[in-house]
Length: 417
Image 1 (tube, rainbow, N blue to C red):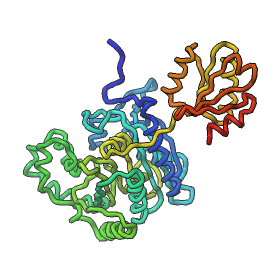
Image 2: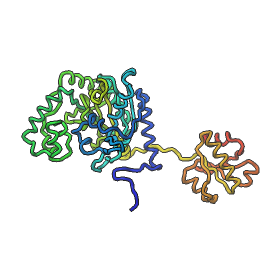
Image 3: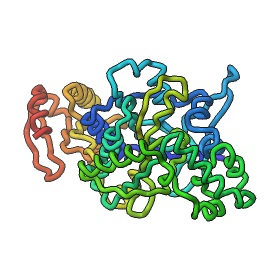
Image 4: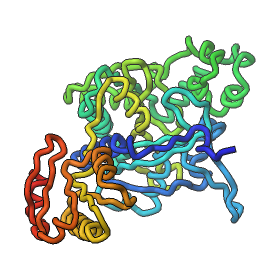
């Protein structure tokens, strides 16, 4: 049997990589404008980080993590999300000692063993931002504004921003009591996973993907009715700041992010078809929870695969770079040496150029030049080597210009014109 890529993974081929580079460059540009700095964390972490950070009762920890024991007997997990590793790095490297807030962004592969469906892979790639050090709702609004700028810059229309507040641990305690009271008479109807969540973390039952559980919780009390005055004030401030920035939003009291570390603000962005493109929120206790100081934080994760899918569904074409500016062909060994010399010198000047490495005929070389979309071509033979004069052809209209082979700047000026 032929070896193939594992199920749930996907090769990103050269013909499509420009799309990824385009959106990544846009992310970097926007993050620079917002004062965010890039961070890169390991592909795997100690499993305990995700158990303590993401939460032992979440689907991610219970069902989806790629966890294994290394040769030293340590439990290691391929990272299923980007926030906990970024926070671990924030703590371990003492970034909390710097001037706050600390604004970080990252690109990372994430690994989750889950059912394959539209826009969901077992290895997906995530763009994320984490801002540590401020409890203010203005930071929440700023982070959300960065998210919305991405879609605006890319021209994706019809996206919906939905926000909610999950309150603080005190709010959560009251709400959990009300939720358990509601679910108590329906306990036997819950799936086995939700039965285990009933005592430890009933809030997670609201996030269950099993249809029978979805039906049970449809009439459950909503958390916004149980948040305290401080959390309510924070949420009102967030709505005010979003209004100041002219960012439209809908309050959705049923939003419950699937990770345990969220407090107060949570949000999701959906496309016009209801597919989740991005999600995030505030996690004021996570840094302390995994061994750091008591520092509040806010962030989001955006799936790059889903973003590219949204671009395609909105018929938005990402501009691609032309592959080659110049192809230098040759007719014999002497002219091949000259072609290699010229190409090497031009590359040092930043010109994208290519020459023959397959001993092709001149006709085949020209076909190749067309295939790689070279702007210009030069063909070298005995006469060109002897006279040091050649013709450079513009492929779009076949117009030719005479050039001196020893005058590289002349070639550069034509190619860059």
